[in-house]
Length: 310
Image: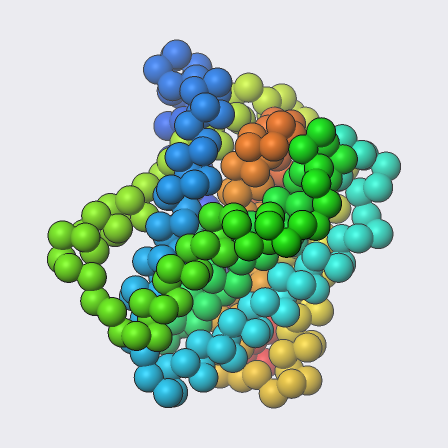
């Protein structure tokens, strides 16, 4: 089972790198440059990613049992993100220019591309359902805390304002999707088809953009940068281990525990690069830390999944 999990994790990372390679080559031969990717970043930020959130609600069927299971999974995933946010507070203080990138990379994992497919492969529809709650938690916090973190210390830093907490793509998407889930609304086939197609753009576009950023980065720096190793240690080992202990103490078990451990142990979110581009951070630093963390996760994810069966 351990090697089967490792194989699945490796397959997901391999697919990720193949799409990244397309973006890398597109930049190098001049078809789709990094500057174009940065100009297109708002498409992901304001349209495609919010559509993914709405779709995650539309794919769930409402019932009393469903809502309780969803809330339990949501609280578990929200707790994981919150622990990650507090875990990184003492770290990365010396590198003020890139501190927010590293902190975001530790706090937020690749829920959509890594966690969901792994849950689907290992746990089936029940695992996907639990992981979907994590996607919602991720998007609420990343569009609130994540934006604040990336803006911190820049000319756009406004501090924590109620307006920025409420009026952002993540929270507004939840405000649209949650009533649809509770009321059991089924969109007309044409509209739901459009939503699906737009949501499906999220992973390939994010990966292609990442490839263009890596094409303009110092790849050797990915292995030389000491901060990358600290991100890997905190994100892939320390955080999931802490969450395993917490989940066990509060009595989480079975499929929910495995889904939570998968979500806690996935590598840094590709949103790290998207947010870095959006708020004028160093995209080469963001892209190399995401690429490095994704590579190492092939070895660590199976270990954390095995823990959930102890």
